[in-house]
Length: 157
Image (cartoon, rainbow, N blue to C red; front, side, top):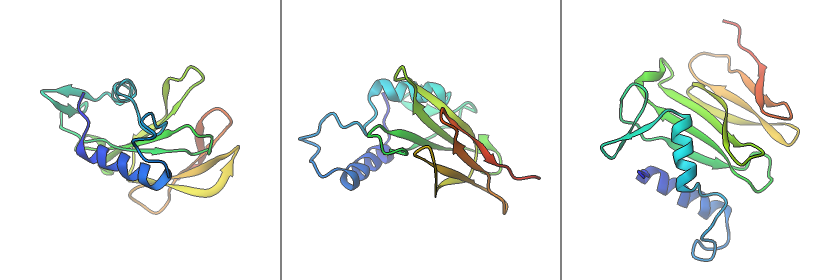
């Protein structure tokens, strides 16, 4: 399984910032996605491994930027993924939020072209609202509805 250097560095940085125990003591950190999780994540994003490299639906080589976060502070990680590719229009990135369901399977809460995201201070049912950034001046906001994230504030175009 291909795991990018960028991903490994990001995981180590996250661990150093969020855990006081050492990696040696905490080998099974809940923040680290397993190989099975990575395979599931790549399948959801329609990313395949070809000749030892990850490629997107446009058959362009990609290096997903995976950020593990605990949005609702329950001790379980959610995952933001940004994939840069010209396949995704003006924004140049595909943004996805994955959250595990009751059966411990990753589900995509949203996935679309975006420039990035920002967690807002406003909270709904323990989850922060998420502003989706990109080109322009108006940025839509997504809010937790008790079961998943859904659009809360639209941008009329």
